Length: 449
Image 1: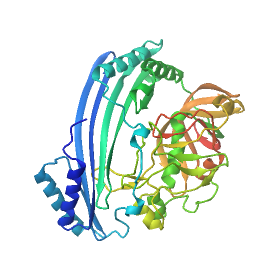
Image 2: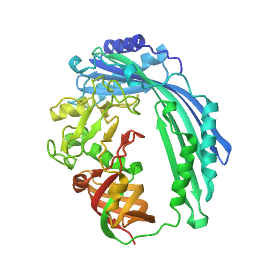
Image 3: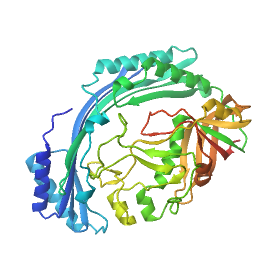
Image 4: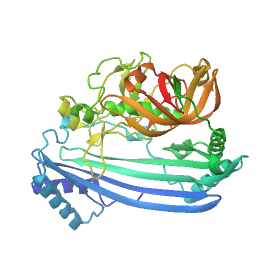
């Protein structure tokens, strides 16, 4: 972690300068980080990078006008110029009746950063990253039938986020993350196929074994060889956990407070209504221990907490920051997110669908003909109507078993109907920011040959 010269006292002094220069209110976010990454292909090192950087963002508000200015220069002269530019820009900005910092009553007051385990102690050095990438690629290439490699990557990073505002909020927290990935090819000429495997974690000790990642990547690649096309039809579809999170992601997009305030969501009138089956629960938990997107407070200093977006099939809340909540006449749900150079906007943290009770094998067992999706390509989602169309590849299901690989398929339906028929399996794992177990959705239309 680079040594910061922007202490909380200094950031609060910057806010005081902004008020002295004419701002009614102001907030500032300071993000500093260190990252280290390596990549290799066919046993040879292709990249070894280390970066250290920091960005400061200042938002000033004058009445109902606001502006954001960011800089990586934190010298006194640069900070004075930052204040001058931000105030001048705010004076010329259009009025936004919903902008503004949090009321002190909305601020996070008590939280235990240590309990969240957001940041592992120490660094993962380059020797360890090289060891991971080497073991991962060698394991993948050792499998008979693998003909080439697109390379293996390993990385580690740490960041610290400091947030302060003229409403009295002033706090910071640090986070870390590590990852390993590999992509390999099988077959030759126009019959080549590729696949990958990947893992990421807040603590490097929670990563899967690099050899296992490499072997799984090779196995997935070999299974894709000689794909067939299928005829257009309507069948049950199974979403592998690698792609099932996209269904949860479509929900979060549809209940984002900004879209609801604009009236551009197909779930605009769905609050407190049953839009999933009664056994479905979808949760956003910013306080999940070692969660990839965990944080003790949101980007406006507002208190955040574990929330059920969908509880027993019923939509319980929108995803809101302060601005969207004011537009809707509601209270922020603590979902504000922002970068140093951007205004806050609503976004989820550790979002997931709770696991069901059926195993993936049993979920497939009664399907006479169907599609098991492992990859999705492109996206055509109409946020106003919920119409859904995406390219897909995976495996054809025959008589309850995966029969052969298939590709060049378009899967279509409407998200309202899809949500109602979702069935989750019991294999939920937390590998991404948004997670879901294996999912089954019946009645989707496949466009093939």
